[in-house]
Amino acid sequence: MPVMIDETDPFIEFIRPPLNETPAERVTRKMRETEEKRVSDAIDEQLRQEKQMLQKQKEMVKVLLLGQSESGKSTTLKNFRLEYARDEWEAEKASWKAVIQLNLVRSITSIMDALQAEIDGEPPLPANLDLDDFESVPQPRGSIDVLSITSEPELSPTPQSSLSPEDIQKLQLFRLKLAPLRRVETDLKLRLGAATEEVTSMDDIPETQSDPGMDSPLREQSESRHMVRVRKSRRRRIQGEEVVVRGLRWREFLTYGRTRNVSGKTRASFELQEAAEGGATEILAGCKEDMKMLWTSGIVRSVLKKRNIEMENNAGFFLNDIDRIASLSYIPSDDDVVRSRLRTVGVQEYRIFVDTTNSNSRGPTPKREWIIYDVGGSRTMRRAWIPYFQDVNAIIFPISCFDEVLLEDPSVNRLNDSVALWKAIITSRLLQHTTMVCFLNKCDILKRKLRSGIQFRNFVREYGNQPNDITPIAKFIKDRFRNIAIKYSNAQRTTYIYTTSVTDTKATAITLKSVRDSIFRENLASARFV
Ligand SMILES: Nc1nc2c(ncn2[C@@H]2O[C@H](COP(=O)(O)OP(=O)(O)OP(=O)(O)O)[C@@H](O)[C@H]2O)c(=O)[nH]1
Ligand SMILES: [Mg+2]
Image 1 (cartoon, rainbow, N blue to C red):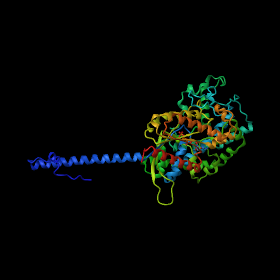
Image 2: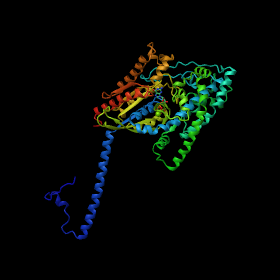
Image 3: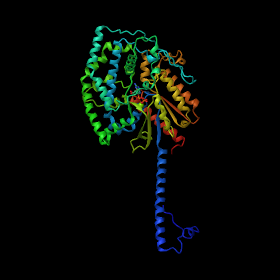
């Protein structure tokens, strides 16, 4: 609003032009005043914009998805987007086709690798423990809060194939018939920009550490270093090593699907890749019956069982959907996209607009902008999280798997790693006002494992003789995480812990509404935004 100048104000005397001002001086003064006003207005405008931005940032809800690799962070994010960014989701859905096809092909090729290992007489992997680490059983790491997790697995030392010559012949035939899928795998990886980006953290571990068994009495003296490499690489594939796609390339690819707003060069490369996809779809359709026969074959199932491989528990499991996915007209469903696996590298930012209340039929529901950061969870990527800790309103932390080890460090049990990570996050000074939400995730897999006879107490000693049932076990794990939060949080912080299976989108939608309400309530209560 313009300020009215009171000519009687004594201050006016100081700013009046000199009485003897010449016309030329007057012109110069006017020009100077105009320029000064222009600069002043520009500064005012900049200040106004900064204030507006600060206000907007204050109103924005910043959520971080943290946790170890494969715990379900990106899948949780997909649920948020499915619920609150439906248009974007629909526009991107078709672009996930290549990822889902690749997930399916990887399952088939990893089965074929397991069969070859059996034919070659390689000993099976001990349940849930990497063969290289059979001497170093996972142990709790010092801290009083870390669960005393032990390892049950027994070694199977007989490197001999149990297969009859007829069985071997049948399996070799599968190998021959499904050989074109190796090419599809390479093409799809290229299409997703992953050919040069495929990383397993095991590659980061120096050869001497990841391969300590060279002098092991259980290894044949004559085994060449080359054979060890071949076996290691096959083992990684069987264990479900997945494709890694650098965030930017993948996001660019999805953007292309949505807006086509990309450079000419990128467009040309995507169009080439789209043409390649047609080839992949045709080969997959041609291999459909053989893939189904492989997955349902009795010999194959018994080899997988003998080698402790539970395909159903692997990331990106689509073997029960071969008919649909390997068809020429395949279009991904919501469920397929949610269940697909694409490892996150670095930190990816997503913006969604979240209803502040449950929608009612009268009038539009008020919304608030949320920024959700999805991070890569493997150990080497955790440093990149820290810059995002500033001013974060809530952290969602999924945990999973009591009986598995980290892919990037097979000497560490996943649950133990999650406990240590949770404690580190809870005690971080930067996050002391942050609302904590923990998901005891993959409960469907937990149930399946317990039903199959895996004993929780064999991995978590403190559990003792309590029943091997989902309800007391879930309570035990939740209590452990809650107690850490209570012990290390200040009085104002509330921690929310849910049991989830985030691949179940219906149930997760209800959980997310509750999470949303808690985040709004907590942050309003602490007056961080008004
Ligand atoms: N059965 C089942 N699978 C799940 C569940 N949550 C996630 N998954 C699957 O587990 C795999 C890994 O999930 P992601 O969400 O990609 O894991 P992440 O935490 O983002 O992993 P990084 O990106 O490596 O840090 C995916 O194939 C998911 O479909 C669950 O509750 N049940
Ligand atoms: Mg992820």
